[in-house]
Image (tube, rainbow, N blue to C red; front, side, top):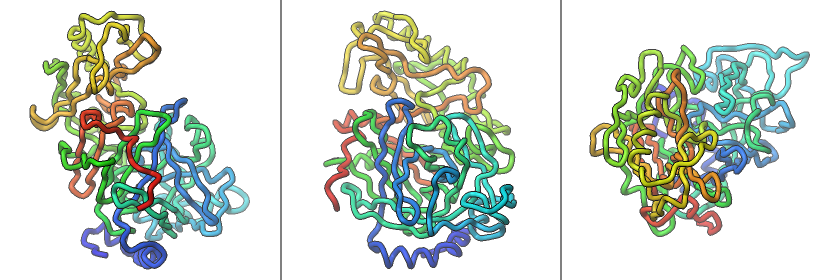
Length: 436
């Protein structure tokens, strides 16, 4: 295991013994790992399942793309013979970049509440709540391997760092869900831990299905293919931008955000630029503004002035369609009978998020811009986010569906496909049944 940077030296100190255990117990050819992800029809959250504890228990977790940790409710029914708290000053606490230590406030220490323990600040983005008493712990975690196109064996990690939280933080999560999987940019989020433990690149890819009946997929490491097509070769690349302030929807002063930001420079509707206050598109010194990619919002949210000009331009370009009454949370709705259809969804104006040059853009077609709210009504799936927003543009879950997103953390880049429907495939087409 090569250790060159300061952060990876810390990781090696923790994981050298772990790696020998993993390679002995699991296949040395583990090059990539996968999670199946399904959309919950009630909350519109994206749900996966991971094995944890001893004996292994299947745990349902909500995907939090920019989350800094995997956190689990340890207050309600957490039992494991391999659970270990991270003690203050330990390597685990250093990796988690926490300097808060404390003792259990109850009469006796228990799982999730130990003396001389260290704490981080996990977030529930769905209720916009940070919890400052998340205890850092280790336990067994099990996840499925893949050769890139087929699922493989499940592999077991004996000492995976995660955070224990009380039950109240699970408010607003889908039924049966016990926590969230953080895929953020920091070292204890799932992508970085898996990359270091299995010695594969710090990369992961997200492909969310638009169907609540079929699973999408998240790949960790190299290799990501849908049946009979390698979409990854045709991705458009743009830099990831670091927001130096805050950790998610409720900013914090002491560390950069673990969320994923990209540099949108302008917006076009049907190929025509709209006039936007350019100051809103950059991240300022307080961490406000910019464009964030988030599964914490079911639909994209635009700062009010941006929302107004984009929706006006969209309505003007779709002047032949019949407007109908708004359907919350959407304000711009049409009769579906007055809108045609194409291979990439309703025949409506495209919306381009223009990036580093005018020739590099994320094009949003009708399948990702229009939401069917009833048999006869479709609405523009963008929400007015108000005037005072942390991020001026939030690209929400609906706009990510059936798009392949490839996050390269080492190079700090995002690769994206735009709609896979152009390739005559979807994110639901990964084979989860045939073993590699």
